[in-house]
Image 1: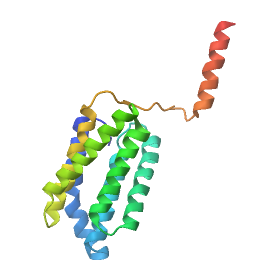
Image 2: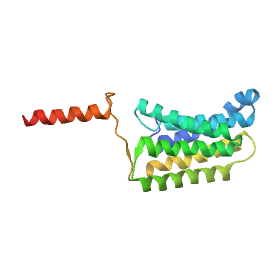
Image 3: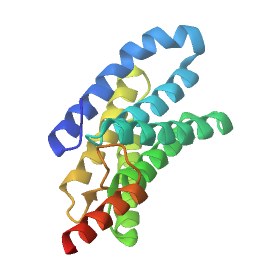
Length: 181
């Protein structure tokens, strides 16, 4: 499933929040509450990034980057709040740095507002227990859905044939030269 529109991103927000209690019931006995939450934060951010583009290879590459950033924060800090910050940074870097294109200043302002607003709403909605965490997760991804309502961004072009950019440019240049002759 892809969530590269406002409506489908809202659906992902609901799914991410609703899946947490079931995941927690399965994972907490094995690894503990903090580790389970950290794992879920990193995994949900990576899955979100993977579904942001219709091109599977580009989405998977960005998801790996997001997961690595989140895992780096999880390895350094034991607090889930710090892991959530790392996962959010991974979402922002991948979304505006790898998958979508906008002017640098605009991308920075957009990601700062969306990620900061999402983290603030998640902190406001968070409460002890599985349902409080589920509500916080839903709130964070709910704010991220706003990305698709902001104008001035477009998907980064990708060559569906799997050809690198230099080869693609060479082929276009040769085609132009053949037209001239």
